[in-house]
Length: 186
Figure 1 (cartoon, rainbow, N blue to C red):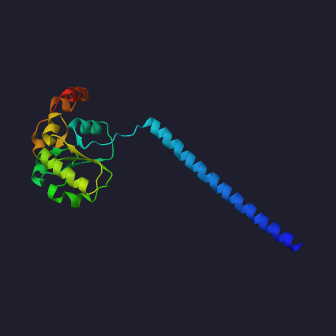
Figure 2: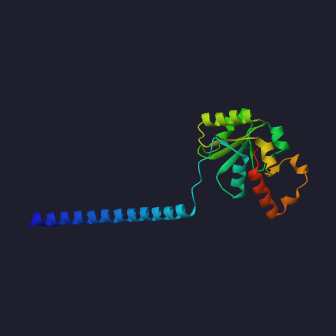
Figure 3: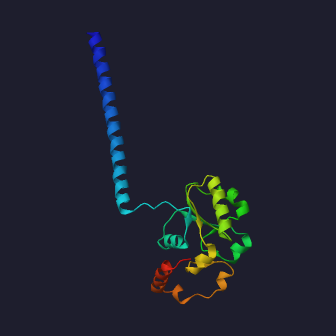
């Protein structure tokens, strides 16, 4: 009779352990299911961003800025004096000779747009970043001049002396101007 009592206790322990595992498994599956449901809902509402191209037209960057898309960085690889005179609004100064060292503060998977004095300097800087392990680097073709040609926002000591245009304060005119510049080839 003592043996059957031990067997009953052991059987009860096994039953409790099995029930515990079942509850834990069910909870885990429920959480995963909820995550997938939320992910599917967000995926249906918020489309994923297409991958960044190795070379980008200024219209692509301007469009991303105008729509308020997050999670990208604009690097100006010109020397500090050129950067101070005028730059794309929001760009960060990363002179090409310090680029790899300073870029260590950025996530390797972040979308990065690079521009310099020339398309050659831009290509050199982009290649340095790619060699350092950055996977989403795009050369901004035409640099600051192309950016200004499409009416992109700028800042800097020289840029602050430039009077505002009529369309700088009128959203409708800005949208018309943007639509017209989308049609231009830079």
